Every structure is written in C-alpha cells, then in structure tokens.
Image (tube, rainbow over all chains, first blue to last red):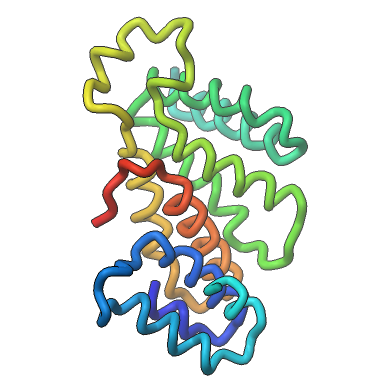
Length: 54
Length: 142
C-alpha cells in the first residue's frame, strides 16, 4: 500500500492513504505510515491526497 | 446447489444492489445465507463476479453503490446478520466475528494493487481502504 501512495495518479494515492489510516501507529515516532503521510503532506501536488491525510 | 446456480444467485443480488441503497440490507441477508450454505462455492463464485467492476475507472453511481455493498457485506459479522434462523450462531462464533471472507477478499485485492491498468489499481485500493476502515474495533490487522 505504501507503494501505492507513490502512484502517479492522485486519486489512487488518496485511496492508498485512506487504506493505510488504520495501520498507522501514533505511538511510534518512526512509523512507516506516518513518515509517508508527513512526506506527502509537504510534497504532494494533489489536493485529494493532502485532504485525505488530514 | 450447483456451482453455477450459486454464481447466478450471487450475480442477481449484486445486480439489485447496484440499483439502489435500499436493496442492500436484503442483499446482505441473502448473501450471508448462501455463504452459510455453500462455504466453498461462495468465494469461488463471488470473486470472479467483482472483476467486472475493477476495470471501471470513471466514477459511476452504480459502481459506487456496488462497492459500498461489497464493503458492508464483507465487514458485517455473520452472527448478527440474521437472528431468526441462526440456531447455531452462538455455537459457531463463540469469540465474536468471523472475518475469513473479508481476509480472503483482501488478499485477492492486494494482489492486484500493483497492476498496469489504472482502473484496477484504483478500485482495488478503494475496496481495501473501505474494508480495512469498516472492520470493527476488535479486529486485528497483521
């Protein structure tokens, strides 16, 4: 799924983000899902994606 | 019930559920019943039927309704779906909900999340996201 968050089509990225939301571990500072979310928040060009993360 | 008859019965439910949200509750009940009566045939017949919708990229109301139905069906616990004739419900699921089908569906969908066709990637991710998020609090995801 994390690979899908780097998909070239934005709506797919946003679905992947939604799918990962249940798998994140807020207690772990270096959690893969959360790191990926943070990276996308700052760098993703698509509004679909950033809104889904929030 | 023969394999093909199971397939036809499932197809009929899926066809109805595309049309309106109102038919979903009934559809879930019907499918749960079929699933209970034909535990091996059910997944074999169900999965090929949803392949059709995986290739539609465009947002279409009937597809969205069907996706919502599949998510709800996969995540509805078997023992609460139908009280009336589930005499054995308490015997079968002593520790709560049974998510075997949801897991089966998830593993099938995950296989296809990396394909070339964007529609398939989109719809499989959409279904995985929907199922994973609709599972009850107690479900553990590994």
